[in-house]
Length: 219
Image 1 (cartoon, rainbow, N blue to C red):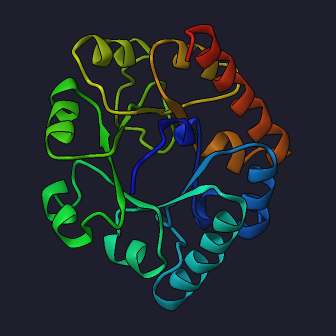
Image 2 (image 1 turned 180 degrees about the vertical axis):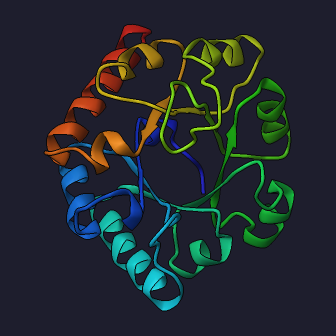
């Protein structure tokens, strides 16, 4: 599968522990708000497991497919293959990308979380389709990690990283535009939409901000 970097513009991530809303309703609201990609991340206290997790992944996959939104699974290549996801996203402490690629071949796109330039270079050399870069700002999801700031994205570009870059960590409608101006292809977020009073409105705001930032640099 060939990745269109424009499909990473507005990248929503959540699982049931991240929201009080029905997950299918929430994803539909976010799609109506303009998101372009979704990552199923069923982690944390109270997360579904086993058949319940699989069933929810199938339901959300169907919603994403119906609307032409990219569907990724966090840290589970087997689940991603089973539900026919578009891709899988792995972290630095997960299974190495080389091993994941051997298992999934070209059936799945592979995204890799990175915090440093060295990690980004390794991911690119190992055949990642895109990288997540962050945390850009302080975030509740990764409280122990110091933020790298939006300038980190610019440094990755200056160092020659050509892969699509999705900036993540503390992204909001208020800061997404500036992050995109530094060279990101997209912004990823959880709380800004998953915990919003009006998820569709929040998704629309963050997507428009990302579009504005991309437009300002001629993207």
